[in-house]
Length: 468
Ligand SMILES: [Zn+2]
Image 1 (cartoon, rainbow, N blue to C red):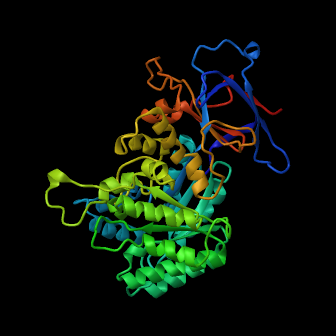
Image 2 (image 1 turned 180 degrees about the vertical axis):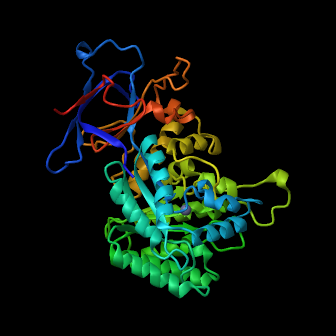
């Protein structure tokens, strides 16, 4: 399973456009001993005298993309021929649970590696250079999903930085399997130092008391083992149910998890129950987080939420209500940290969507009514720089402008004919890449200063100069 071919190290990229700039620039790279993976050394106005005659529009160079929340082991179950009899018939949440549970019983290591490879190849070619990958640990799959993730993390380390989440999708403090599931989580955490994050799903526990125990356990173990923490939380639209958000925040505060005590981050996913919060509840939440400096980020998972997150007892299918976190509002109005994730692909929880994070930013234009240029830049950040910061791989940068000293991870949107008709429509701005994302063949991806060579991309393009 070869990861993509990579070029020699880049010395420079010449004559490209940057976010919020109409002129063209030359980017040079450096590989100092303390940053062997490469950094941007300088960004200077393009030297037009040294370039050859160009007919197409200059490429647009932006920070690379990130999956802050994606399920590696459950990806593309629908594309595996052996699951042909396990496709959705009703599309309900209960059906998704039972179909996926049945598919999990048949997971094998080769099958996990094959589907994982599909996800990695399609992500990397779209411009993804970092991902937080969830893999389940429970009595059904044992440790085999973690084993597959560890193998893929190593095989693809030249193309993508993968964080592994040791993830309890199943109950760990209720049902007949709770004890065994907890024991397996502990075993995985002990056996695999490659695990970066502890993740659980408190809402699957059969009682509120067990859900709170689940939260306590995850917070304590993450603190003890120095890992990031990631909860699937409050995935419903039922006002009768208490939002566990408050319990999570109070537990973090009580245990002293803040930006001064640790560099580890806490991510909260789905949280659709919060879409029913009043503005005073939102203000209370933001105040709690800001007062105690809790490093919490919220990840909106709109492709899954739009498909599944409906209120209980929905009376009339002509009035389908849906709930998904309003990420731009959460950032702008309440000063909270928010990002966007793909969550599931090709399975009964989310049969639709692709591994391209830009498609998610594009969906955000419609879902959040966020169509201005400034909106599209924020949406791009949510699948790029903000996502990378939220999973703890970088500091938060409030701009898509490349900067000197930045890691050498970029995506270039090139003016290439993808239609076969000898016609191409250039994308000169961030907004144009978000409103209608160009295909993979129009994207060149630079990871650690090396260019991925595939299809039309490659060092034959005159804008690239390589180290001798
Ligand atoms: Zn998820």
